Image 1 (spheres, rainbow, N blue to C red):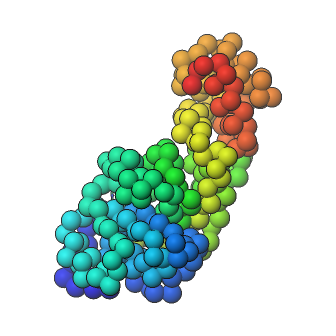
Image 2: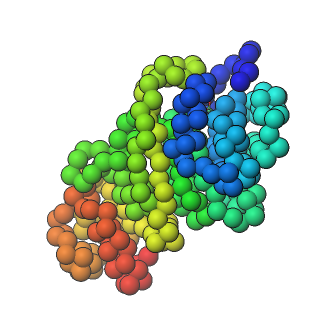
Image 3: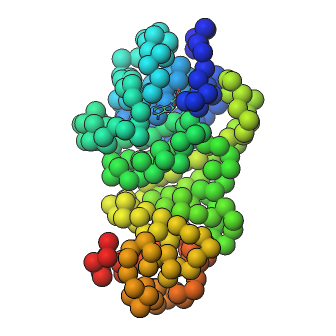
Length: 272
Ligand code: SAM
């Protein structure tokens, strides 16, 4: 992959990968088969894009914010005619535009995410209601640990619950900082998530409930529900009781399935 004379931009989280074995391993972790369509976020110099394209004849769409990478990407991806690079900010892209590029067919997400917006990108994907089969992404190690955390630990938060409900999450590998150019100040890890279609259809609203419950970690669930949904204490207590929860319980003590119960109760009461 050629990146000669390229000025890396810190503000875009540009830490590129060059280790071919690692790049191939990420594509394997993602379970990309020869027919899969793939969305990549952050093409960079095209190193991961190129390995994805070696693995599938399906369509690959890669969204990249930095237009100055265009000539490098043209050169580095010229062997593949199934790759379309879209220049723009993924967070500003209408999900329908992405759906159209894949003819509304399902696709996998594979990416080495920019650290500074990894969490918003993950929530963007989850809340987009797109036909995503799996998400396999390189993240800062601490975020990967948070995503995989269990209840009653300090790492457990909204993102652990929502991703845990959206699918089966696995950490597939730790990646030391030395493998990136330029080298970042943090280590990384790859997580892979096979989407569970059972919850995928409600995940946007479930995500809203989870965010409300974790809005003020130190407050009780009853207080967060009252504040987040503008309901009175009696109603909040009743909803919690219907899910077998104490009004004084805190968000970090709930198993992910208990959030599905809260979602169902809030829906029944027309609060969502
Ligand atoms: N995929 C390449 C690799 O593995 O070497 C590059 C990964 S680098 C960690 C992240 C890439 O995301 C950079 O190329 C950066 O310019 C791009 N990027 C940053 N913010 C973005 C955004 N909001 N939308 C799309 N791409 C973005």
